[in-house]
Image (cartoon, rainbow, N blue to C red):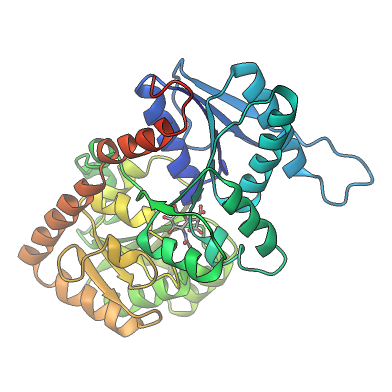
Length: 378
Ligand code: GMT
């Protein structure tokens, strides 16, 4: 099949997922066309089946707000026509679903063809931004106009149905992880650099937005560190970073925290860690936590949104209510004090992650595509 994938090219979970999906489809022989404004960060391989089309937004003094959605829709039309795409798969509703609707109408008018549009909802497009009155009518309309809708968790499906007037069914196709890639052996030399005296290693990775409650990560670490020698690696970057760097200084624990910025090679960083902290206000799924579990790292998270669908309390990690820093700290102290149980839970985290292996999930997308393909799956 010839598939157009539209996504955000950044480190965010939706872009990561869309890129990994495109790479896996290309490996299976499909022709995949990424349409976005920058080369997606995880698109770091050469594959003859992968094409990347950069959306440029010409500026003009009149444009206080350059019209990305218009440029994107025009680019979609161009790629659909010139590469004879079978379908468009857009990730994150805003503005990708509405741009796809526009492209669909143009193709219909130009050549009388119906180009199927599949919209995958990822989280904040529904739970945060999409719900805002400014966007809601367009989001509802363009989701309903999609030929198929998927959500990355049962929780996100319910959130969508609860907050938008959706008149179509929503398929849940969960996020996935490439187990083979993430279950590499830890690099001892790397572990020694981070924790030279054999300290336990905590990890957090996110876009450091408010919804991630990164200050709770630092507070949990500060509490645990009083009892257990430990280090914390903070991967990623975003608006809350200066605030939490300051918090770390106030708590006098800055020497034990490394802010390593945005990283592409998560499969090398994750395996040296013991505990992944994700105290988010909300996660539709928590792809970063799943990648950690695949690397045999246990997860201490909140029980918000779709997190209970991947983190099994007492088995693959622990969960507490949003903001319950004490509970999350105590879970960490207890498990780090019991090496045998820690190792058992690491293995259980890995085993559970295997249920979300890429090889199990890609066929679900292919099956969905085949419902719309002109000549069946090819
Ligand atoms: O977590 C973010 O803020 C990034 C966001 C995105 O759209 O890139 O992530 C969302 O999509 C991920 C992939 O499906 C999910 O794993 C994340 O849980 C979800 N984030 C939220 O719901 C806050």
